[in-house]
Structure formats: C-alpha cells, structure tokens
Figure 1 (cartoon, one colour):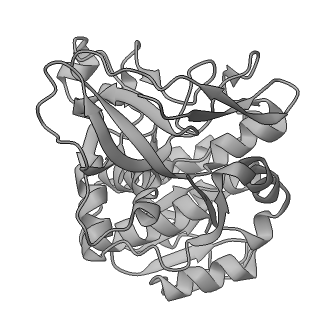
Figure 2 (figure 1 turned 180 degrees about the vertical axis):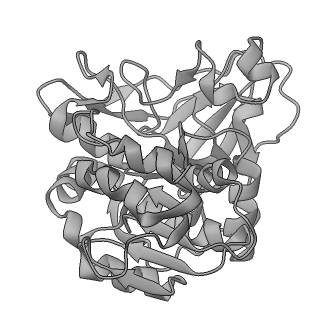
Length: 338
C-alpha cells in the first residue's frame, strides 16, 4: 500500500508533532482501519498538560487517542466479520479473553488488557491502525463518522448507568457537565431514570445540559443539593466534587465515581457513607457497553447536538489539543477529522 500514515506523537516535554510511518499490515484476525475522526478525551488533555493520569505516565513519545471512527480498508487472514468499506468504531481496550475477568464478562478489569493511548501504548491519532476485529463495531448510515467518534465516551456513560443498576424513575445527580457528564445524563434517561439534576460551575455547560434533558441545573454548592439523589454520578474528576458526593445521595442511594480526582487521594466522610448505607462504585472504562452506545447514538436516545463544539483538521491536531487544554469553559468536545 502506497498511502502515507501520518501519526501524532506526544512526548514527555508536552510537545506534539506529526510524523510519517508505514501503513500497518493487518495480522491474523485483524482489520486495517482508515481513521476518519478522533475525539480528544479528557485523559488525552491530562497527558498533554500534566504528562500523566493516575498511574500512567508519559516517558517516551507515543500516539494519543482512543475515540476513533473510520472505515475498514483491508482484512487480515481469518478476519470474516467485516468487508472493505464498512463504517466502524473501535473499542480500544484489547483484553486477553482468557482470564477469569474476561470469562466473567468484566474484561475491562483484565490484568493484561492493552488499552490504546495509555502510555506507552500507541493510540488512534493517525491515518491507519490495525486492531482485532472482535473490538470493532459496525455503525449505521444514519450516524456520521464525526458523530461516531463519540461512541467511546458514550460507552463510558452506558457503563456508568449499568454499574448504577438504576431503579425506574430514580432521581439522578450528575456532577460535571462535560462530555462524559452530558452523555451520562442522556444514558441515565435512556436507562429508565427519572428526574436528572446536573451540577457544573460553567454556565454554558449547564445550558447544554438543559437542552439535552436535564430537569434542574445548579452550580457547585447551589441550593437543594443535599440528600436529593437516588443515584449520584461524579464525572468531573474534581476533589471537591468527590468529597461532596455522599452528602448529595439519599439514604440507601448509590454513588458512581467515573472521574479521576487530581492527585487520586480524596478525604471522604465515611460516617455519612455508613449511616446512609450507600453503595459506592467505581467505573473503569467499560465492558459490554459498545453495542448499546452505538444503538443509542443511532436512534437518538443519546444526541450529539451541542456536544461537538470544535472541529480541527488532522494537520492542525496540535492546535486542537492546545485549544482543548486552554479553553475548557468554551469547549465540550473537540474532534479532529483526518
């Protein structure tokens, strides 16, 4: 294949540069995908700004990105579920398929999982990637390839509501109205949730939440935030927000932690957790959520209107990262189109 494979590399000095590499050849059971669009995730911004997220640290240049859509370009030996030209999205966490977590359906906890764009593993900010076909999902024509780049964060939202086991008609509080929070809001409603309350310090994001179905919106510390949620979701990655979660939950409620607070450690009021007998659950990426995410995006239960606020061409990918990092108040989701 004579095509050029442009790849975006991020180094430990926070520099981004585009380099040309050979187009990879799909191996047994793999497909070659021509990337059409990539969303910039909050984790990508963390690696760009801070050089780390949680226990993952940028030490050597690597390719970021894991919110990708594209078309199937070629098939490796034995790949039989797709044909050239199929429009697809990728699930970027490649599990072993053999361990007890994989066999029980919780493959996101696989100790040998290879997650694209968790340094030093390369991600999807390039023109071509290869991936096992079992981690590829066909998308319908009703969904554009740019919209489909939101399938990965939508899968996070689906996993959040799956972890919450939402009672029908429950009241939900979504703390953080960024991309994940706005997707959780919609997934909560799609899963049978009732009244939804969004909390965020940025007025434009609260306005977006209203348009996407929030019944009430408040800034942090606003009125009526104590003891109101049957389910409380933390999607902001904020120490202050995390410390306030138990107070927002009703007795017997559920608290779902999806965001990574800065520095990882947070002082929590465990007495409130115990006295209210709350269920406190973490969310680590997703498992068995992609099919639902694609369906809800396709049929409109999860809308992308207003979520994609900025688009950049791949040749300006470094500018896209800089914009996302420096303008969080004006940005919900940045998508880079190849």
